[in-house]
Length: 112
Image (cartoon, rainbow, N blue to C red):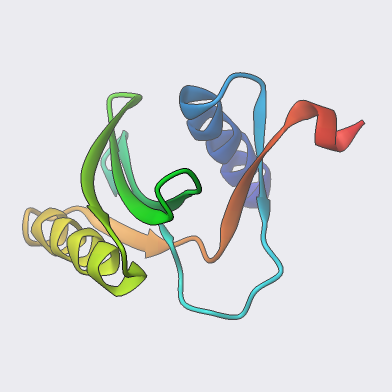
């Protein structure tokens, strides 16, 4: 039951960033690039995505279903510092954050 709610929640988050999207675990063992933070029933996400056009990483913060770019860099470690800073600020304000592991957002056509 809990895993079903998590899958539904992740699907809603992904849909807020990309129409008709679904979230799947990526097949990687490296550190997380996606965090889910909750305070009561309010949910925020912090994640790192790759901008293939600029060959840079992008740190994104989702609040009230709206993505905001909060960092962009050549090195993933720099984007991770931005994500960790925001996560630390939320946790200091009594938010509960957890890593979701590696995730990727795929279009619905990838599942057909």
